Image 1 (tube, rainbow, N blue to C red):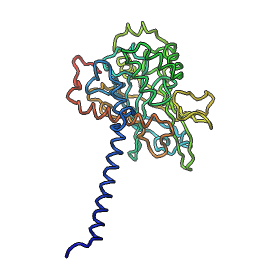
Image 2: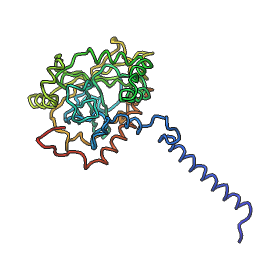
Image 3: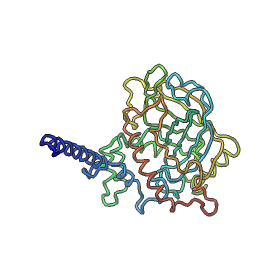
Length: 353
């Protein structure tokens, strides 16, 4: 029996609808990838901008490429349980895999040439949920937005325009505060003496459903000791790894987790703005580093410390950086895992880089 005109019309309309849906999905994907807007900032474009002039170090993280692994525990005292129902903030001991690192795309950079030092953690609860966080030692971020960070990378790498950085700083006055910190804050001779700060704001939710904006820091038990840059250079290119390995071999190293609670009106979307010192602070427990392991074949080597991997009781705030970091970290992770053959799994001479 032949199809009626009405059924033919219905079929055509269905096919048209399907085609429209497919086109919309393709367009959305293309927009997300930046294909329809070449000037739009994408994760790939941001990661590309991190590369040094001679190209990325294949097989390594595209930033914070130089690092060393560790394992240990987070000993929660339960003091932050009234802020968040996250299982690893309940009193108890939780396994940690982490990484000390330097803010550079060059895995062979001399330690004394890199101002920013980092601490990355994966804390696992008994139910399998995870809290991943990647922190750095500055007290605030250089710029206010991911777009400005991309602009900073482009300006600092622009060899054709001698005024590129001057113009960038004029357009982003917040960078001046960071430059002042970088030029005047004391250096230490050890990862163990650094305070590591989340800088980004997150939302903690407690068992009663109450939300609170927070930032956090890991404050060292070791007393910071100022060391001149010239003294650090004299210690060799890789003194930080040697120092932390020796320290942990002698005794576990510790940091206190301090959660800082925002007051109403505190800037939560701008990590370049520090909160006032008088904000409520909760000492939530202790990070204990028990074992140092070289990164090649180490437990942190293939970990993506995505800051949006959060347990129940924690979520991102209106700060745009965690989502941008997550997307960029994914690009970096995919690229370096595809370059597996280029990564020196067994470096000669026992080099831990």
